[in-house]
Amino acid sequence: MIEAHSSQRLQTIQNATLEAIASGVPLVDVMDRLCAEVRALVPGAWCVVMRVDAPARVLRPLAAPDLPPSLVQALDGISPDAAVACCAVGSAGDELLADSQLTRFGDVVADSGLVACWSSPIKAADGRLLGRFAFYYPELRGPTELERRVVHACVHLCAIALERDAVQSHVHRLAFQDGLTGLPNRTRFRQRARELLDALQPAESVTLLLIDLDDFKEVNDSLGRRAGDRLLKEVAARLGRVVDERVYLGRIGGDTFALVRAGHDAADAALELSRQVARGLEPPFESNNQRLTIGASIGIAHATSRELTLAELTHRADLALYEAKSSGRRGCRVYAPELAAAARLRRCFKQDIRNALDRGEFTLAYQPIVSLATNRLVAFEALLRWTHPERGHVSPSVFIPVAEEIGLIGALGDWVLHEACRTAKEWPSPIRIGVNLSPLQFGKAGFALDVVGALQHAGLEPHRLDLEVTESALLARDVATRTALHDLHDFGVRLSLDDFGTGFSSLAALRWFPFDTLKIDMSFVCDLDVDADSTAIVRAVIALARDLGIKTVAEGVETESQHHWLVQHGCAEGQGYRFGRPMGAAHAEQLLREPGRVVLPAPRSIGHGTHAAVQPSAAICGK
Ligand code: C2E
Ligand code: CA
Ligand code: CA
Image (cartoon, rainbow, N blue to C red; front, side):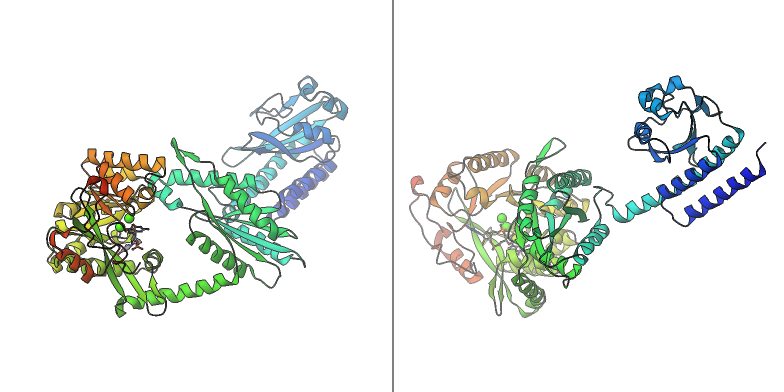
């Protein structure tokens, strides 16, 4: 018979435990208190609560007051199901383990003086094993009736506490941890950075590094999101290996990671840290048997006083990152006040681009493309020019990304298309006009109709228009892009793959889209004769294109020897300063009126003589 007094005590323990759980007392404290109360109620037994460590599939002690530390240590990591662990139990009834089964713990158990264990499972509402509640006895005996009642009540209390804790941890993880990489997320990272800023002492600094992967979008688009995710995880792991405990690492955006560090030497350590990051990311990544190299751009900013808010520090690091990105891949920049001025300029720039179209500040320059077999001019590429009222000539490589960013590329691209078609209409057939397209123009519904509209408006035959697209425009391989390009091709418009060799999926693009021409990027052409790899690549590209029935155009031909090499290796057409710089429409027309339209100095070794109608330097326009 259990005394009324004990029953009442048990009831009080239950109530107190439930109250502690409800009011958010930390799990370990709730369990410690519960065990201590139980010990007081049943003095002849030692009480232990163990929790299942799910990833490791083992038990970990959560509360074990008065149990010898060596035994607690021995219990850490035992299997949740093994009967040999002194926690074995049957589902019908809890099981008593004799000392023979406790010998696994050898001397530890002998030293503790405990010879029997009675252990019960703690189960979740859905039946999952959450942990074990165990009594250890100094004599070989089973549980008393009171102890049975206590255990019955305790496993329920423990289940409630453990389930609630698991839910809370999950919510915490969702709120503060990046689900993909397991790193602290943006919210948690900002919390930590703010703590460091608040604790900043004189002569100390807090350093923030923003790390942004170069070309991650291309990887994602060409290899798929799963490959992209794997890459991000691997990047996170590598970053984790290069930082030490003084550095706090987080993932604060899609492909943006951040590091923050405080201390006397934080500012000095930043550059070394960024070098380590770069080195850590250097070895190629493996993805589906492909080797990928991916670099990162890094922006660094320091706070030397608590005056600087986290928002300001982040803004500075952002500006530095922007500079690092625009100065080429794998850049690293430290914030300096000039960067803020540059950012202000960029903001003005955005407004200026918006106005430029209305004010007629854009023009087109036309660069000759010649047949290498005949030395005759066969086409021009239209290149956009912007003359800023104060700053003069601005390069398209600078303003086109801004126009894309502010959503103006559609209108600008449309203007280019109409203007180019209108100009080309004045040229003798079959001289073609090449027009560059931004990837964002494809995304627009009705893009193919716009092109057809521009052709009809100008009265230009479709086969005289050559649309130049880069691989990145095609990476998404979405049905709309494909349909638009096929429709245009069926209509007779020519398609060129621009900057061939600089992207990720050149060969795949050739299979998916009906290209007529492949423009070999000037980075290979300029190395012809100098770099064996580039030479081999260009040779292979020409051969490959020939097999596929696609014409090749070499971009950026500047020297006679490059010219000569290309003629010898069967490249169809050439473009570059060797044949003429981009020029105004009037100059282009004048060139076309030249008898025979032979415009270039042919390579001497082929013996064509020299026809220098265009002096490369005399034809400069806007470059
Ligand atoms: P791109 O399509 O590869 O154009 C060729 C670029 O190389 C032009 O630069 C041209 O002036 C330059 N170039 C030509 N021959 C030589 C040479 O022998 N040596 C050197 N070093 N450079 C040469 P540009 O005009 O500054 O254009 C840069 C890029 O801007 C273009 O590269 C193209 O991607 C983009 N772009 C130009 N116009 C437009 C346009 O109307 N729309 C769009 N979406 N992009 C455009
Ligand atoms: Ca082009
Ligand atoms: Ca190009």
